Image (cartoon, rainbow, N blue to C red; front, side, top):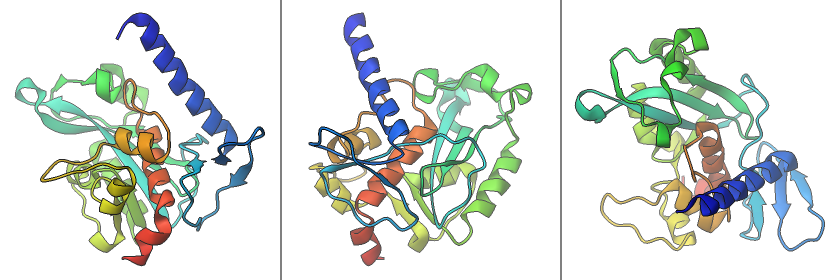
Length: 237
């Protein structure tokens, strides 16, 4: 990709992001004037002609809701940085408000920050910059999830690195929910899973992850996918 195309792509993502953050709700397509509907705690399934807000940043500490969405970023440890180590955790509530967003101190030597994808740099993991201990964030997330529905994309990977379990009946994984993949027109087989970027592009008409990942945005995008099929999804649980 040349620099001009790269700038255009980045500008398009920024425009999408700003539009959704400002809306605070559902934006209907095909209208000269946007009609915004406030998100409520139990929002019904929405049609494919609607675009759900991807994130609304209100600062850490928003109230917990029955449904929470999570996304984590990892850095690499060990030889060639092949093993995952938790570097950032983001949790949003049903309204896409930020409940928790923090970088995490890594006890092992980081051999690959994976910055191009993770967005994580050395200074982010410094306690002086606000990074918390793994134990502290693990306990915090564990308490948050008790009795709540957890939404995530390939969420078992996040839970594995957090060294946490969550009841299967209370877990909604957009990477493995086949009706969502069918709605996106994606055929998966074996261990292959549809990417979050693919699902958002095809189901929500939203571009994400054109650069380094943002775990707040990714958690909120995952939540938006869940809401898009919530009624049908919950009826099968």
